[in-house]
Length: 231
Image (tube, rainbow, N blue to C red; front, side, top):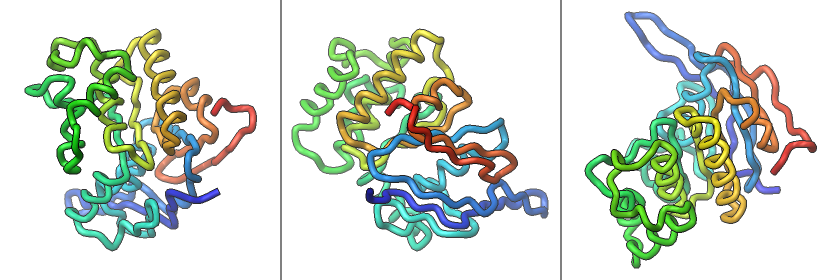
C-alpha cells in the first residue's frame, strides 16, 4: 500500500520568555493511502500541534514530514499553502466558517481559489451530499452547530483532497449530532477514497478508525492497528 504521509523524527519547540518549550519530540510514523487514523491523548499531549505540522500549517523544528511525496520542510509558507490547497482538506472543532458568506459560498471558496469551473454546481452537489441542499442560502449563524459542521465537511471535500485532517470534529456537538456527523464523515471519506487523520478525545470515535496513535507529553506511547476496527 502506498504511503501518503511520512513523519520521521519530528519535533516542535517553541520559544517563550527566553526559554525553550518542547511540545513534540522524536515523532515517527507513516500513514497509508485511503486509511483512517485517530490521534488520541490528554490535553497538552501535542495532538493538535502534530496535526498542524502534518498538514503544513506550521513548520517542524526537527525531523522530516513528507505529504503526498512533497517534503514540507523544504517549503516556505506560500508553497505550503499551495500544497494544502491541492491535497488537503480540514474539519475543525469550531467549524471555521466565514460568517459573512452563506453556506453555499463557504463551500465555493476553496473551489474558486483553485480556479475550478462550475463552482456553484459542484458546491451545491456537496451540500446535497451532507443533506443541506435546502440550506445553501443560510448564513452560519442561522444554522445549528451540527449543520455548520456539515457545511464544514462539504467544504473540506470540495477540493477532492488526498488527505483529510479533522481536529476534534465532534467536540462542540451533542451526542446524537456527533453520531450523525461521524457517520457522514466516514461515509464521504470512504466514497472519495480519501485518507482520514483525526484528533479526538472521544475514544468511541477513535475506535471507528483502523488505527489509533496515542500520545502523552509530546511523544507517541502506542500505535495500534486493530483488525477488529471498523473501516
